[in-house]
Image (cartoon, rainbow, N blue to C red; front, side, top):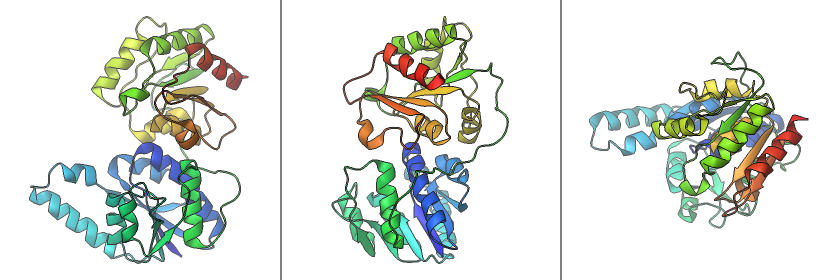
Length: 316
């Protein structure tokens, strides 16, 4: 049975879709699974052991160059390549109009959330089959239930992300080390820099090097400010998502704000603490691992001492 998942972005959403992919591979005999995803996150989908083919899409890049003939030529080739494949089931677990339109380009019956469950209700108009999934569930469970409804089984069992990131660390680090994931797409999700400095200093006193990955120049400068004055703290070179995944597998612990990297660390089995300042962890918190903890809530940032205590429990 040929199955296509449409889950394009963002990084956290892509990670949250992985358990649904794992469950389909486990529950559907002979399942052959492809995944359509925005090109910046294609490396994560490729880490899933059950994904046969990753189909990168470049909506974000194309949208910025709509007047370019090269954009329309690239889109045309993408559409032709997609239409050459015939799927038995196409599942849009994004629930947005843009993902529903991408879903509509694929050949095969289309499944998605109903109007009450879709993040953008109008998206439901583009599906052949609409499924009722409560919005109050964690994102991981919403994805699992949608896939189960589309393919005719009941979602059950453990949450298995199915990600594999083998190999040596891509940079030189001093073990044991902690990954401190300070960056996020929204300002209200940021944790105060003084809290990060306090946490890094306390971890160094306990023999753990603090490593601060980054993705943009603004994030690099922020990490450098935090790391300044912390003995042994490392702000490494910029890394790809695949490299970061390999680095995470060697980390002793991780702490991060509501960012896709924190979800990726937890999905890879790293003991991790999620720091929530501007969002609700009940819906998008670190999920499915006994070695993950969520602290804070929307408008209620945890203190540095709370995060340190949670990390110490995970270090035991």
